[in-house]
Length: 342
Image (cartoon, rainbow, N blue to C red; front, side, top):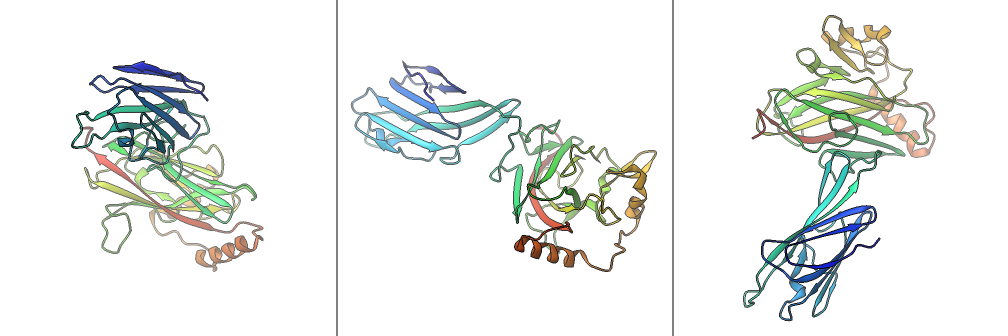
């Protein structure tokens, strides 16, 4: 991939195949030649100086030193996961931005300057943030991969912010990748909000989902489970609540992968619908499984979930998974609840 380069003093705009590169100069006039190539997950930048007194070793891309430099040239070859690159998802665009800075030495007559550098791409429809993203998290167990994250309004991609005003909807989606297994049903067994990244006995908590899959927040708000697109995915529209307003809030959730034909009072997704009462997400005809949401949901089986999980994990390790029992993982991520956007 190649980008054109040009001499400039105030602004330079270069177009790359597959990417749009915008390089905006600082307020001061800087005369140099800059060439940048935007790769799929990296970029190369070459800065050629026209000032003989300039020291190219003092150039920085984010917090990265030049990969190599000479008397009149600095070369950077960096991944977007390095150098403090910032990632922004807006609509159909996926952008990586950073700052190219010149850190002038104390005894130099050169002035320090900064140039924002942005590589913008068309966001692939199937692109989701990775484990490094603050709004999306991944956990692998055996050859199963669990994901949970904050999404945009129509669940088509990751959320652009973790800040939510009071009364707004927080779209949350969880999924499990099941490459070599029979179909799995993914459930949110429990979610609580807390003001701490870890749950302690003294932690202040706000229950969201409890009692083995009962969405408590749906009783007094617009919170609800959205219709499934696939059994291995679950979508939750959670209306923000008056808990720790203006503070960082950590949402802790337990995910449960289960046999789609094995629903019972402890393996379910239930929400409250005005005028109808508690309804089962996956089969309205079995909504009686949600009756216990007003009391205590207990399993009729003598075997505990813990023993089922232990047996399942042993079969994962041995490669003899067979029929799915319970596979449970926990996730924690943080949001900021606000009265309004300041």
